Length: 306
Image 1 (cartoon, one colour):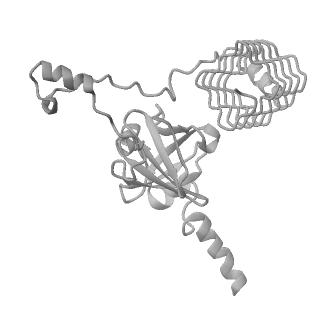
Image 2: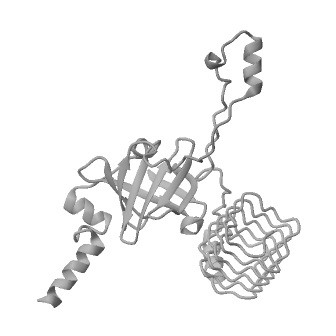
């Protein structure tokens, strides 16, 4: 009896009561409906989502400015950017959590309008989420006390105006951080050739790939140690944990490339464009970085960066 009971308990623990684990089963068994992009925006903007998964619980506050603030079950905190894509996906990228990857989920309503399910691109249900009105846990609070302006007070007194009633100076609306749009675009001409190069580049130590177009390619764990990638386009490529030891990356375009945990020891990155690249926990010990553009890079835990 105990042997029969254990699998059932395990199923319930993993699937929240043996509920549907995929979008198809959720739609079929519970009549779930995908939430349209504008409704996703209304659901999250200025509100908090409490996300539950089998191995994690996290709260995210989606500030109208395009910034997102998060807190895990402990005291750990992080921040990042969010947006809703033209495919009705809720997308966010945190500075530290999840290796700084851009994560996008389709949103499904089942019954209670304040509760939703978030699914990955391959249709797997990843999170159960509850909406909490506003910044319910003060996640966006910086703890810094706002200081009053003596200059404005003196000016108002000279103008015979009460400081308490002084109209605020016009504020400039903050530009939302670019997350989905304004990214380098890769030309899809020669698509078959591009697929062949991408496949080859996944296991190609010492290869001659100078000038190759590898933008937006999936090169997770790629073996490119000693490869010649001089002037190559690797913009927005996913190079998580890739081996790029002593690779020639001079003048390569790595804007917004995903390189968490990548091995770049001894790599030649002189003149490389790394704007917005994710270098969290990457190892750049001994790398040549003269003239490299490192603006807006994520470098928490990276080695070899001053």
